[in-house]
Image: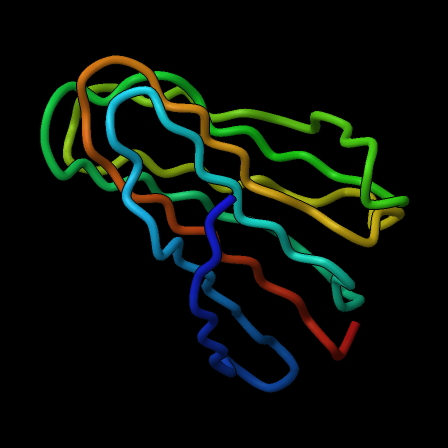
Length: 124
């Protein structure tokens, strides 16, 4: 499991984005997991970005959610292709979960990093 740093920014009145970046670099067959617990209300979307450092990037990044912190439910995924950046935005239609994670089991001969961002609107 990787831990990262968190940056918050107010985008416009009532709209906030948070970016969580993994501190680890995935190397070859590796796994990075970024967990965000106690998710704030008014969540609107997540964005994953995988940045290629070297090699051939493949596999998928999964968006998982949980209520109890133990049993994760797969909500969506992003398939990576061998390019400099892969990114996808996941729209949140239900906020019944209190924790989310980006789960990135890598494959092959590669080196890459994972970034997770989410946006919430406090005025809605």
